[in-house]
Image 1 (cartoon, rainbow, N blue to C red):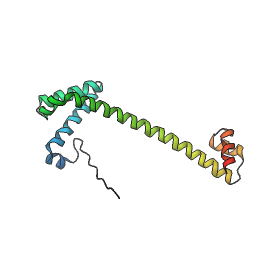
Image 2 (cartoon, rainbow, N blue to C red):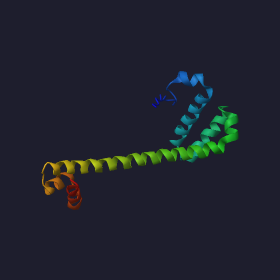
Image 3 (cartoon, helix red, strand yellow):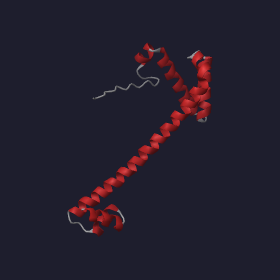
Image 4 (cartoon, one colour):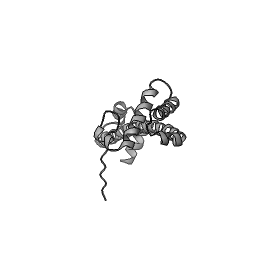
Length: 137
């Protein structure tokens, strides 16, 4: 089974034809834009609260925000934290990839008969790590 997903940017200024067709999606885009605008001025918690207030005051999904403002607040706070976690995981994955690449280079160099000392100079790996890699060849 294959799944093909098409992703659309619904940030303000992008894909306006989609946002015009779906008022709720357009209003969500306005709300998120306000959160980002306010976040430049103060902390995220206040930015979310002020964006909710802005939407209520300007009749943007007013009933929804009046009814569900605490859920929206908690969800966005968790979502932003998730973005931070994903960014951290990406950096961690990059570091792991670099380590694997260095070990791969060491393994290939050893397999071609390059000395342990030269491999250590090239990769910066500890001699014990290089020796362990050599033992696995």
